[in-house]
Length: 146
Image 1 (cartoon, helix red, strand yellow):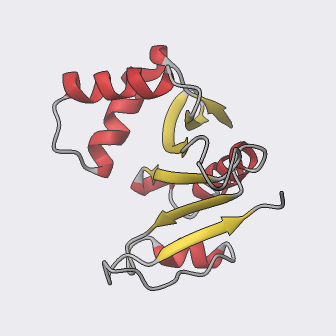
Image 2 (spheres, one colour):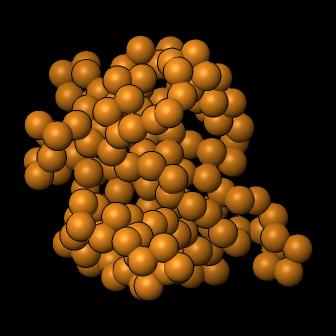
Image 3 (cartoon, helix red, strand yellow):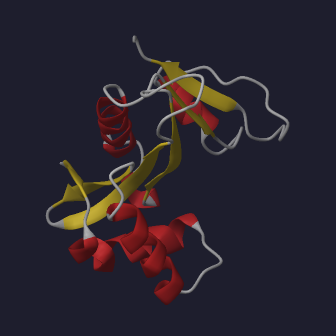
């Protein structure tokens, strides 16, 4: 089950953030988490199985754009699934929730994914990466109707 995460979820989120990889301590990471879940332009989504968080995604609506107006641009920052739960629908469920959250808020949603470790997952969902200056990280995107 996918649901929006809040401050009370930090105990389950921290092992996921650590598993994905971070250079920050738990205290610093918790501060960042508190900041983003308190901002309506961000959402943290978690996939829960039997009361345990097994994956998460973090998405940002960049807000109003001077030339593009409202509903312009968003970014998927993180999508992570614990290794023993991969290939079981968790990532697919998180990505569906990301798209559902972003569609009414932004016109374009983009993200980068490692060419070998993550891009095949997004390609299997039908997304196509484009070259980016960081050659190991193609850029993926979705354009929603206006």
